[in-house]
Image (cartoon, rainbow, N blue to C red; front, side, top):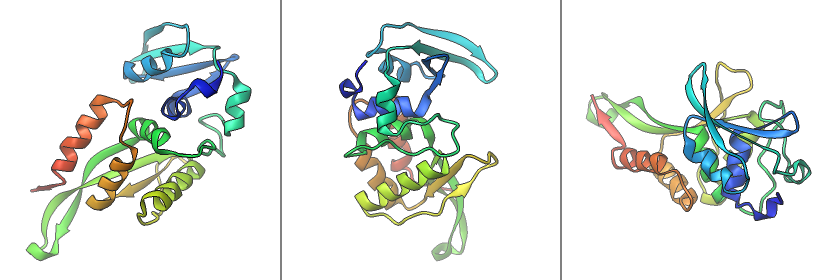
Length: 201
């Protein structure tokens, strides 16, 4: 299938969960929604299988042309050097990527104006390869004018994350990437958290 028919959102899904094995693309995820989005472009069926972390859905296809993905800058998900694709705009790509590779949670903090009372403060973390995250970091900084963040390393030597705790920055990020199509469960969770950015103990 010619990739010019793909939206940047769907390219973001391919970038986020696609692996190339035995001359075909394989997509796996526990949320069937993401595979149904990709299935719109191919003639293959989605099936369920058991994995070590529980049930997951799988879609396999030969309908994407690898040479076109390489033109976008494709490398395998576990490659030592992996970057975002070459695109004129990253809004839709980042919506897909963050739906799959970001988490919203609460971080313990202290309110000095209130006698150092402990509370939970909202944070968003985006995970990925170091080079790819450096690019996302710069895209967000240049596009929505938030401060450049220092990457932090996880227990996995290849995986890093950036963290945003400013509610203003978090709102800017989500306002920038919002659009269609989108994963409703992810965005319902965003709405709940953004409306409740602090939880006092």
